[in-house]
Image (cartoon, rainbow, N blue to C red; front, side, top):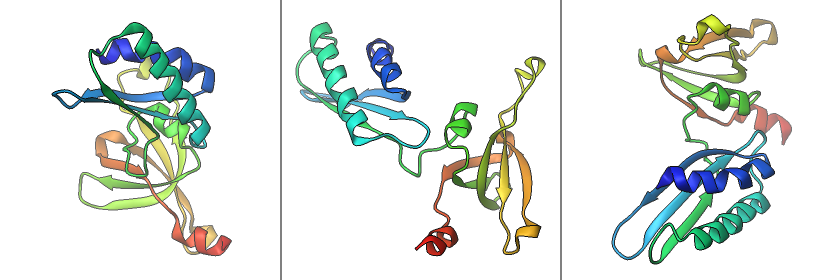
Length: 166
């Protein structure tokens, strides 16, 4: 069912320049919840969320895929939404991220985006470059990190940068 709903949603998302991250139908009984998560570089405006919601609601009513009442929730991902794919790292390039490594340590820095792969690297793990900003700019350095080493990557807030800009 989710794939059918996603196919109804895709033209609307394409028109608004949004990527569909997740479509899930949950809950039981009389009132199911249809949750849609969309995103784009720079974030999603409230207007875009409203347009997605209205467009999908019209499509769903016309197709009558869900029998009975349902609740439609259209949202963008929060800071704790995990980055996992090349598209995620591309979409959030330049943003501050926190990387929790499998070994138990963590790093924070600026996401410089996915490492470009050649066609013969199609089976390789997703890798991304992280700019680690030290107290002295001359000590800043880049690290290439493989998702094979990672437990979780999420967007974060660089509080030093926030306080400098206040």
